Image (cartoon, rainbow, N blue to C red; front, top):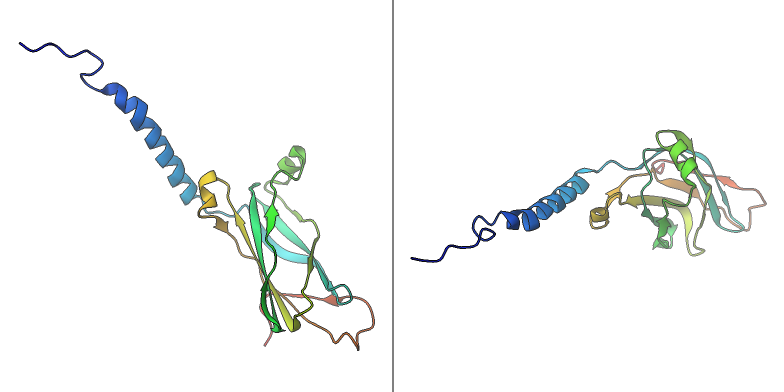
Length: 178
């Protein structure tokens, strides 16, 4: 007659608890993160924007609708008729930059965002087009497949600096007029 196996080895129920359930929880979190594709910020319109040819700085202020705060990055590309396409340095979106009470009051509302200053490279000329792609990750797993939202492109005509006197130039939001 063979010896009886200990109780803890017989059904192996403890293996299901130790290994199975954590794997199910991790798989559920990954699936939830991949299914969550709604952008945390919706860019409604450009409230104020001007270009200063002397300093080559473009100032932008968007009206945004905030759904939630998530970290991320801004991928910015500037394209000119003269000079081609230039990738600007990536800007990190810090979700913790605002105090908690301000963050709580802004979620679910539409407001005017901070002014962004972008320096246009001196090698570009003609019609300038700036495109920005915000990439956010609200879940840790979304760093591998971030949420990409869209903003309308911004365009303006680079003036002749010899004929330009002073002031700033308006920018156009939306597709470039042909």
